Length: 134
Image 1 (tube, rainbow, N blue to C red):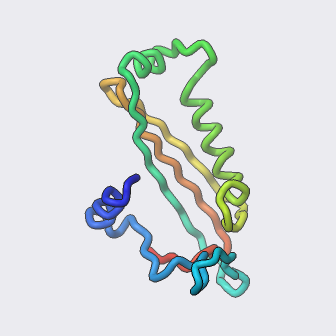
Image 2: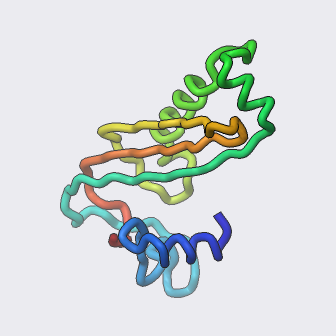
């Protein structure tokens, strides 16, 4: 999402955005640092991300008809999303690995077959890994 899209989203949906007073993974000199979460309380949190993937209508029609020779495109995408969520601590620098309580990946093909809306959600009960606040 481009910077102007993020700003527009934040202005339109302020209750759905996270706001940071400062980037906690950078020290005062701008060097990367790991956040100490040792003294933070355990809380239940939920993160949701959404993306829209566009495609040719013929591709969407093939997906809708189940005509992709390698199998169910949405089943593979859902599995890949869940597997990626479970490995976030390995894939994102300075991210604390967390034992996730739940992960969902929902995919919806648009009526015109030209896009798929993907919504992923992860839930965890753990010490917060940053000083971001809702």
